[in-house]
Image 1 (spheres, rainbow, N blue to C red):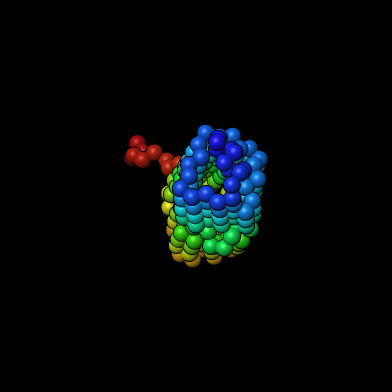
Image 2: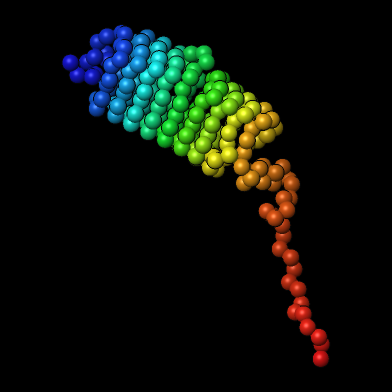
Length: 213
């Protein structure tokens, strides 16, 4: 039985591997996956409503515009996956998940607890985080150009090696967030500060020195 037939034919899976299958648009609602692996599976616009994933791995998969409402994530890892245009709000409570070298461009996370979630070397351009708990989350090496954060809890969030980050401090709880000097200067200048050595006006030219004859 091929991977697509197995995915649609059963409701509970344990210790299985699904590889090199095209399951575009498949409806997996209310299924249960434990210690399963998905490798190079094509799953754009797939439906994960009420699905339970525990200790599962996704590697090289395409889940663009997937629909994860009420999806339960426990010890789930996404690596080198395409996760663009996904609305991650409405996940089951307290997900435990990691993203490594994934493309999450144009996605949104709304009212989700992502405490200690790692986003390592991910593409998060124009991704939106609204009312998200990101305590101790790690954005090491991730590209955040155009990403927005609003109403987020950022205590202990590590942005030191993030690229293109801009934070509006007044719209988030930023105390304890870790940022790099470039981000700090960008935030300061946006608030109207003139940072010495960063935006100083050039000194006027000086007349040449030397004695007048």
